[in-house]
Image 1 (cartoon, helix red, strand yellow):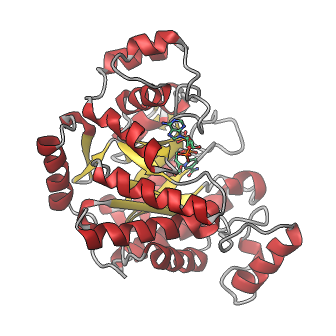
Image 2: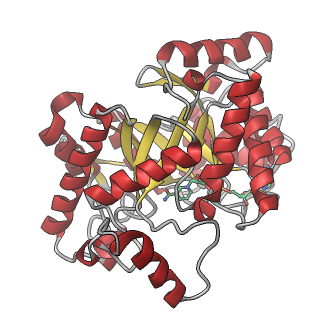
Length: 377
Ligand SMILES: NC(=O)c1ccc[n+]([C@@H]2O[C@H](COP(=O)([O-])OP(=O)(O)OC[C@H]3O[C@@H](n4cnc5c(N)ncnc54)[C@H](OP(=O)(O)O)[C@@H]3O)[C@@H](O)[C@H]2O)c1
């Protein structure tokens, strides 16, 4: 396994080399937790469980790094562990060939959903057998700690999954380890919110311990609905309450520092819907995260591919100089208020090259995205 983790010095040197030598715009990199992070991150959710898709991701990761990207997002369950394994192979070859140093890259993964192994089960029965053989049978997860038959955030399970992820990624330390869609519990698990908050507390305590042990650097919550629905909905989560839990466990120096939610031209809640209370004022999620000192990560930047080739001409006028709608959607997201990083799933080198060409231009002035947000209201 490859030792080390992202550092302020190495990420800054990586960013500065690309700005000086490769024409990447200065504003492309942002500083968060002292790390210089590219505003476009590589995601790895979609795609089938084939060797061909594996090769596509390996090529995409190499291209993305070669073009100045240093923020990679995955999850143990993506493509039944194949995304993590593909990224692990690409990283090992990038380090061996001198394309990048381990310390220059921020590598993020997630735990929560049962990951399966190389392929998705073909039936419910196959899934149950896999879960029994690998998780409940050996005593890693108790049946009372499972929501909807497919998700857990029990401390022993998180630790177990992290070890699998470290092996898949061939990395000793994960920079950011997320709880994956914890709000699943509010619809498919505990109906009692106090019980849910206790589960979150137990998970955060385990994650703080993993930081202490050097297995992870930071932890976060990667969500879909929980932080962007109205407070009246059953899946709603308050970011301030979650931060409060981290503070109860580890004080002001806690390591709950990353939050992920979908945000794109068709899903604007994280930057526009004031549903998160911070110091008695309601603000949108990413504004709340900035005030609470968390790094914000937008996912599904091109609406899982659906915005590519489908944007109205008025959007092209607002973001001149780009040749494709995917690039314009990326430019919107990386320029939106309080977004640190925006993630695009890239399953091949051609998409990585097309998307990374956005980094040659600075983000648009925030007035442009604010104007567009008003128009889209
Ligand atoms: N709850 C969560 O934790 C959560 C939820 C959703 C997403 N995420 C993370 O966020 C990442 C991004 O979201 P996403 O992958 O769901 O959606 P996305 O980034 O909006 O879209 C990815 C899709 O767009 C395609 N694509 C990429 N570049 C393109 C281009 N230039 N032109 C046309 N199509 C292009 C990709 O195809 P190819 O694969 O062929 O390149 C893929 O099918 C995920 O990969 C994942 O890492 C996290």
